[in-house]
Length: 269
Image (cartoon, rainbow, N blue to C red; front, side, top):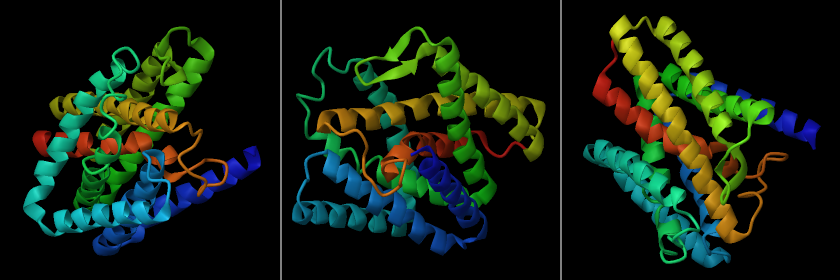
């Protein structure tokens, strides 16, 4: 299993690197739609009650239709990205109260419907970052990966206090602090690479820390989907890693927040 996981991880990283750096914007938009909307949407539908192919296909068709309309209606991009970023702030409160107030048991409709303001804006955010500069996409992908890895190692070595025991028993507050530490180092290095001024570097690092924190919400939200569905993984398409959602959960939350943040603070060069 470890060998399979490593091989899949290397191939996946290589595909992302080459895709981000070499694909033209239009082709990148199409391929990323297949991954973030179609494949991830298929897994999302399965986790939220659409177990049979016909209703799941209708769900995906509707998701794709709205995604394409949103893509063509460029004036809607910033609005949808803002709505998604605000949703993740709201989602934090839902995740915090999970099980204590039966939020999701009383709002079963929320889990499938939320895919529309999570998957589509995340895809639009990815396109916007790639159009600005592909390096920003790679920065964000590595930021989320570093936050996740730092949280894992800090949690393993120092973890004592559970962060969200009802959703992900393995996550700890100490691991969360480790994620912020690792993210801050990565953000600092990026500031030197991009040539930001001192003042803008501070703002960019704070934005990166916020994004790293929000990425944890994406991870926990996907854990909630799987827990409500009684599944260990979102799918089986990635040998040793599970499904697409298992790999992009943190990124789904990070994308709109990071993109909106950059829109607000500017390039700072």
